[in-house]
Image 1 (cartoon, helix red, strand yellow):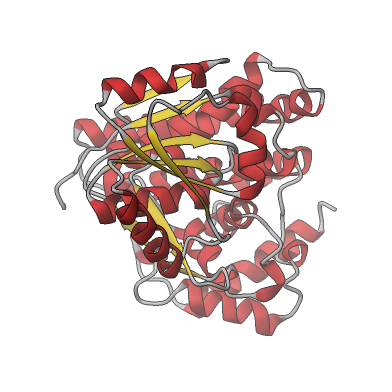
Image 2 (tube, helix red, strand yellow):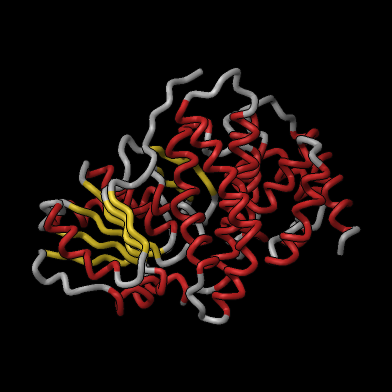
Length: 360
């Protein structure tokens, strides 16, 4: 078994109303002066009313161009280097935050993150997912240290589009099914792996109990206990699975299927977590855990996560075979517990498609 590298949580994490008022003091405590802030367009509109005055620092602001690609990381890193940045602040959704982490790693400086969506665990994970300029998955990079600071203003997330919270539920639900598939095959569990397993199970349990209620409360603009539990599960608990478990708590079949789906143009309008959510079902079909799929179907229907390839715009066997072929490439994570052939995955997908047709 490979050694575990624990990067369990950000160095400092807070989630509470008004928390961004503490940002200047947190930056001063860290000794930072030259701030380089990367943001998206919509994320800046969402976060700006909550951000404090940073005039006591030498701050530069840069809008990202819509993709966490090598070209965008290189561009932002050069701008940050010219600014003499000693801290990168990322304000936005998962891809903006992944760019910020990548730039900080390139410059060997610290990162502070302010998420405006709860759609992935990007705020609390020491890694970036790299895509092509066209939005096709390429690779993920794990960094040697955790993020320095994460501040979560729940009011910003309450005002975000509900589709992103739903996608976050799908992405976070995968933590249990992927981590379990890896960890339960190990001959023994170290303490960090045990914590990863417990965190992964907590992700599933909290989301199944509070996920639907959180979406309803968000639609009603109600900052409820269920809403807070779900956003913190999507952001923090989710990040702890890989933070404690390292490669034994990151990705397996569901994300391999997501990666394959990103190479189908029909799926580009769907969010990361929506594709991962379908990947959970396909992974379970591959594992022949049909009873668990039946248990998940009512929850998927309640929170409107996709049950089939057809719901993601994939309607032909040719496309399904292409997904199966890409997801089972030699370097993909679907093989973590055992080798899977394209034919095995394709047949599992066909059975899943037939099964989900009968519940509509």
